[in-house]
Image (spheres, rainbow, N blue to C red):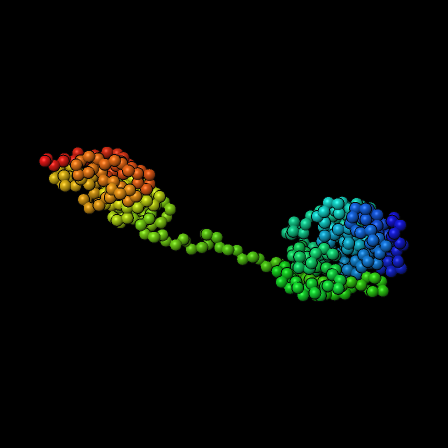
Length: 368
């Protein structure tokens, strides 16, 4: 036992009665290993009884018999071990995240033979949702608004948080109204416990949890929301935007709009004349190329289409370069926006847009 720790005062005999030997053993642990490991300051040893042990004992009158108590941020065991030593009927859970402190608590529980005490090395946030207790206690841990956020989720409905706050109890409670509401607490007040003559007088903030913590509003998922706004006309494909035909078409089908020219799996022309163009369809081109009179008139624009396709030889337009010039010589293939060559897409052959030759008869050029 530390030489600085005096004998238990008369008030301790009155308050602890037959449990005093257990409290004397605990006081010796605080004054010895507790000081050596830095759990309490060396100047605290001479006033351990009045300032710490008796001060914590006043909380016992706010706890009903047989309740489960969780001491949040227990540190050296104040007030958790004091309550467990004074009230063997209570089940006490000491929660402390730091290793050296939780190690001291485990050793103290074993030395004091407190079988109803459990030490949990954890943070309060880690325990939320894993256990519910009747009472949460805290002493010199954090400001009240933070304590409420940590402690209220650990309480069952009807449970109470007891925070030893001293002279600043009223001011801290006045600043913590939002935290009380957010945690589902109510009936928050400051009470005095103990007796000044016995050094047990203390001011305690009491907050009762009357309901579960309000659930957060969940933003509707994409399945709950209305479908995406419709796309502008003229673009279609597998992305779901309506365009000329609504779905990709082969060159053997007529295009949906006759003027879009932007159909295909990516919403644009795949090879110059396939998809939703409708102005240079391969099947129409091959039928008309069989007629020598009409093919002569339309040969300068390629065998596909009706003669009104109005393809452009400027790069970047859906039509691509002209299939055959007026002289009959094929123009050089130029890449379109989708990466294909216009000369292979049906402008010159009147085919399907995939580079396959037309099945119609060759186009006759007019004799000079």
